[in-house]
Image 1 (tube, rainbow, N blue to C red):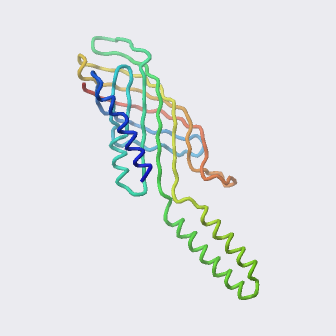
Image 2 (image 1 turned 90 degrees about the vertical axis):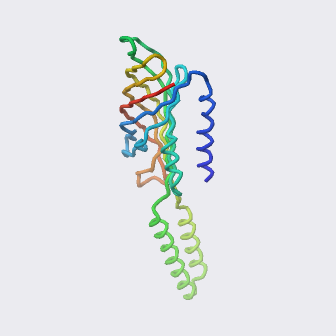
Image 3 (image 1 turned 90 degrees about the horizontal axis):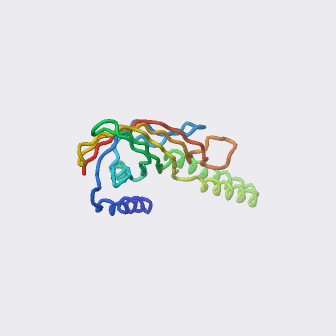
Length: 226
């Protein structure tokens, strides 16, 4: 619950941008997600367009609608934000320009582990307790209690949820078509490189998660109005 409140606070913190004169609002459709290079875990696929806020040379994309949808689920959280700054702009024809923008993104996804894992751990703990009691009846009290304690401690170490995160540097280049200063449309090619914090697939490691190199590329289609 606390993490969901943090997400809502983050969304509300961007509202001062909406008060600035000349601010534009829009939507962006995203065509792909980001892959971690070692284990092929992927960032959340944005099936719902992000809400965009454009002010001056800066563009911010917020997964507000997708985050609100995820908040309706008790065991799932999905939040992402991206930001870009225009570093080069070139007029092609009247109303059409090419742009180069540099920016980055952060995506966070939290989910509960499968209930079957917890059930299996509980069953194993109960079996260990029964075995310990049988051993106690055989006059091996101390050894049995030690075994029961060790089994209980190991089951308590199992996490009930996992949080994945992607932090990316993302340049994007594209074409923008604007009618005056009121309405605009853009199509962009976006590439990214960064790191991902994802489940650990190494059976020899004691860590539940690993930090991996992450890469991705995709297409963004945007529309906005002032």
